Length: 538
Image 1 (spheres, one colour):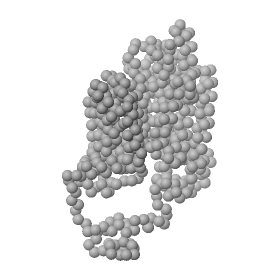
Image 2 (cartoon, one colour; image 1 turned 180 degrees about the horizontal axis):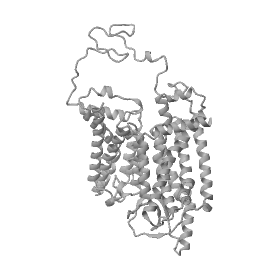
Image 3 (cartoon, helix red, strand yellow; image 1 turned 60 degrees about the horizontal axis):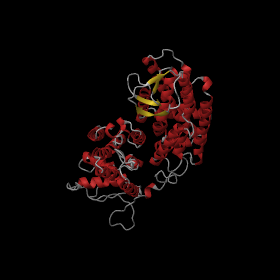
Image 4 (cartoon, rainbow, N blue to C red; image 1 turned 90 degrees about the vertical axis):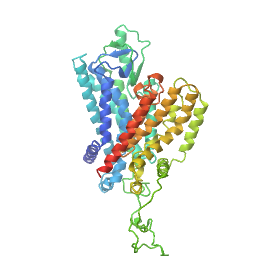
C-alpha cells in the first residue's frame, strides 16, 4: 500500500510540475523571498517590527522568508494544489486507477503526499534563496543551517500540510470543486492570516514564540519594547529604520511551534482522508456524480433528429442535396452565411455576457444590493468603503474569461463569425460590464464628493481586472490562475501597497488612473495577441 501511494504521489507531482501554474507560483515564491529579505536599499518588507529591521543572520533571514512563504503559498499554492482529482477524472486516468487494488483512502493519501511534494519543492527553492540573500548581504558570514531551516520545518511546512489536506477535501466535496471553493478558501485564508497576527486566533504562523524571542533580544539591548508591534504582510516603509541583532529561533525555543506543527500535520491527514466520505473512486455513475457525461449506452439516443418528412423520428443518412453534419443532426443545404454586419458586435457582446453569467441567477441581485449600499454610504477619504468589497463580487464571473469553462466549448459554433478579434473584444467587454455594474455607483459617489481622481481610479480598476482575467484565462486555458492571482492583488490593494493599488484606495500614493488604464489596455492586447497566435499555429 505504501509503495502504491508513493508511486501515485510521485507520478502526480511530476505531471503537475510541468504545468504553467506551477512555474508562475514558483517564480512568485522566489520573488517574495527577495522582497522579504531585500539585498539592496528596498523598503519592501514581509515581516514588520515597528520601525526596526533585523540584521541578516541565518535565523532572521530564514524566519522572514519562511513567514513570507507561509502567507503566499497558503493562498497561491492552494490554487495549484486543488483540481488534481478532477484532472484524473477528465483524462480517464481515474478509471484506470479504479481498476487497481488502490483504495479510496490510499488514492486520497497519494494526492495529499503529491501536494506536499509540490509545496516542498518550492520551500527548498525558497530556502536556497534565503541562503543566497544572507551571503550577498554580508551582515553575517556565519551560516547556521539549523536556525535557517528551522522556521520552514516548524512553521511553513505544517501550515502547508494543512493547505494540502484542504485542497484534497475541496476536490471531493460537491460544490467546492469550482470557483466557489476558491472564494471559500480565500475567506478561510484571511481568517487564518489575520487571526495569527491578532493573537486571538490559532497561532499557525508561530508569531507568539517569534515575537517573544525578539522582545527578549530588544530588552536585553536596552531598547523599550512596550510600543513594539509586529505584523506579516507585504508593505513598503520609507522611514529610517533602526536595526537589531536577532539570531533566530533555536532548538531550545522550538517547543511551542513544534507542538502546533504536529497538531497541524495530524489535522491535515485527517482532513485529506475525510474526503473519502464523498469520493467514489471513479467507479460510480458519471451522470450521478454531476460530471456532465452521458451514461453508457445512451449516447446514441441524445439529439436523434429524423430527416424532415419522417414521422417515426428515426435517424437516417442525409438525403440528396442535404449536407452531412455532426452525428444526430440533419442540416439543410450548405450555403454561405450572410451575417448582419451592423449588429454582429452587439450580438457577440450579448452572447458572451450570457455565457459569463450562465448559472449565476442571483448575481445581478447581489450587484444591486452592493449598488444600494454604495449609494447609501458617503465616501470616506480618498476612496469609497464599499468599492473594494464590491470588486470581489464578480470574481467567479471573471475567472471564466479567456476560456470556455466546464467543457462548454462553443469554438466550432463561433468559428462561423467573421472576426475572431471582434469575438475576443466582445468577451473583454462582457467582463467589463459586471465590473462597471459594481463600480459605477461608488465612482459616481466619489465624483459627487469632489474626488475626481478617486472616481477615475475606480473606473480604471474596473477596466484592469477583466483584462487581467482575460490574459490569465488565455495563458492557462482555465480559471485557477486568475483565482490565485486576483485575491493576492486585492489583498495588497486593501493593505495600501501602493504598487498594487489598482482602485486608488490609498489616494495620491496609488498609481495614476491613466497608468492603470494603460496597463489594462496592454494586458488586453497581450491576451488578444496570444489568442491570435494560438489560432495561427493550429
